[in-house]
Length: 312
Image 1: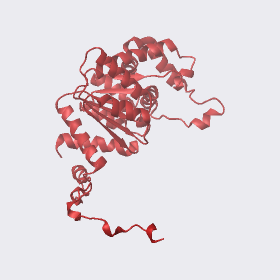
Image 2: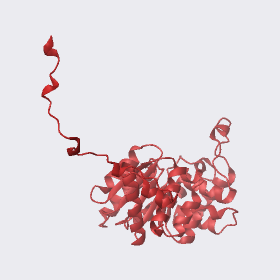
Image 3: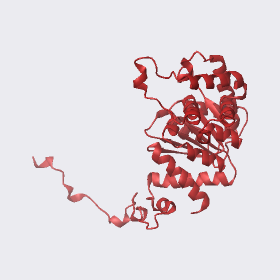
Image 4: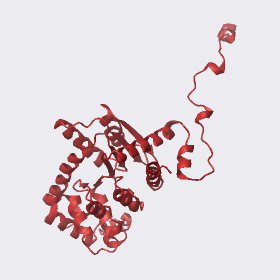
């Protein structure tokens, strides 16, 4: 049965040096002894996400220098990871010029401002019906949106916190946006947040406040040309809101084609990938997808963009 063994003697080869390769020693990570962030970023391998991350920071810095819109959409987990001071600092430096939160983000931000702590242990209260029943959170936010909802959910709550005597309002992203006069919008899905299960809740008021913010968000997105939009940790709501805002702006004749999108999350999700990174940039611009823990990735982009802008 000799015919069963293929004769490899006829195989032709060519010199290794002639082959086109995807990986080169020129792209390897470099060891930099300066221990600076710039040195770290420059030392990243010239491969895959190493290329993308440096390019993203460069595009972000260009947008800031050209005074283009930089929108941060963020899930509540960013606040729960203790990252609010970095978001606030980027707002104050005009490196972020608009913020979009989901309903939980507004709740955690409010509780940090007035209470200095947030994020209860769900299991502890679920069995006896105490989960989500903190009085002040539901009363203040719901009443704020009843009284001032026509101004929008984010603006009205930001104003309330900024003008309050809450002991930790300096840690509030909502207050920082209000004081810096940048748009901060809150996009609520009814039934998803603890304040909806309260006797203080008014579905009409919540809906009006959030819908005003959707309209405000469309206005922001209509100015996104040559800008940046970052989605940090919102798996469903904000990617969906962004897609509707973008198509509305384009439908009304605004040129929103050449911009950069970036999604940061701990795992791959369908909607951020297609609704933030892929679909919006099909007619121009580019999108990036980065995976990693929030408590590592946000400090990395915070110091990364500061380093890029300062040339350190």
